[in-house]
Length: 207
Image 1 (cartoon, rainbow, N blue to C red):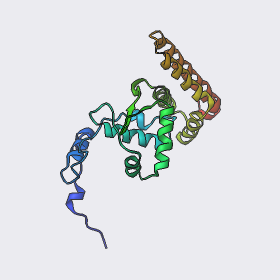
Image 2: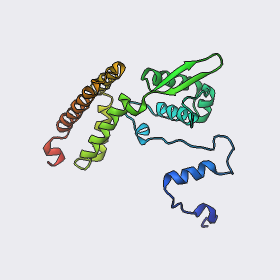
Image 3: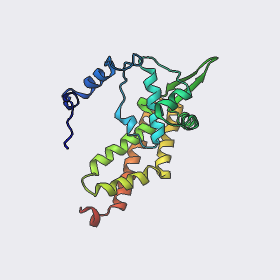
Image 4: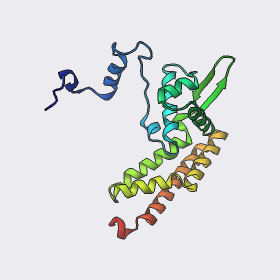
């Protein structure tokens, strides 16, 4: 027997994503709490060097901020939102803090969370440079093999070393370090090119 669907569920959305998400956020059938939504750059979702849980927790913390500069959700609130254990949330907040993606401040009654320099953060800079490189070579090789190579690369000591170099530059925050940052990213791109050519030589990638 063929299932019949209510016409409501067959309504096709033709609005741009941001406008449609705004409509979803303000839908009166939902709870009156947290009706808004946040702008979340795709570079956070796709950031290499972060685990899936680290990304989810970072996004949840930013969502609680809304139009504020900081927020103070409890560990239990985040755990309920993500459907994971409190211990897992605590562990990954610790790694996000260690990676300096968030700052944690303790007051008398609350723990405050603040995203830390995400617009120029080393993890995002190296990750986006990696995505940029992928875009330049993805049609040259088998995409599954490319994915496996990238996954190996972002776990390598070389990848971590480039991220660490940028972290040291950002800790100093000298104006002259902007040039050093560009040099580091250019060096990283060269590293990717060399590693790519080694992994996919001409007889493999058809060049």
